[in-house]
Image 1: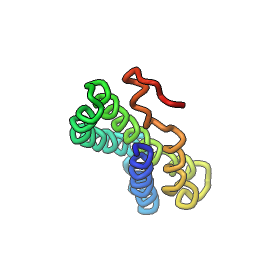
Image 2: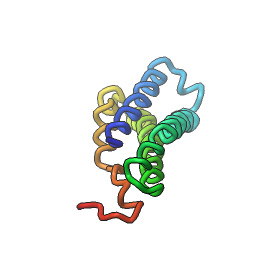
Image 3: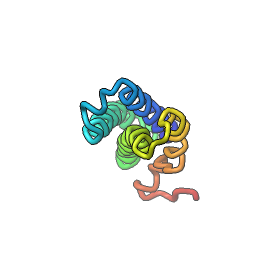
Image 4: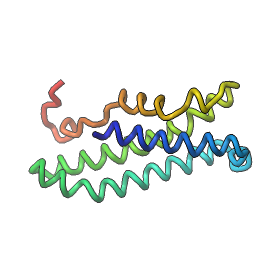
Length: 130
């Protein structure tokens, strides 16, 4: 499921940023650049997953739109999850809260599950089944 992929990507980004905060390497890099790097990593991962999944989804869905919508969903969820995973710890640190407790993988995974970009049939014009 795409939401689970988003949770995994977001948790990894969160871990990288929390480690950067604890080693002070984020302050040298800058918070916006750190979030940008994690967003780029999420986008690159999404593109890689898109390349691998689109042909299979096209074959299984019997339409190029199904394959494309699955690929775009993967790209969107990995990019958004990586961005959120990097931004949450920085936000909580800025608020004076412990980012390791509040911005761990469970928060990002829950947020990714709420987004639910796993409805690729909607983009292909099919009934989403809600």
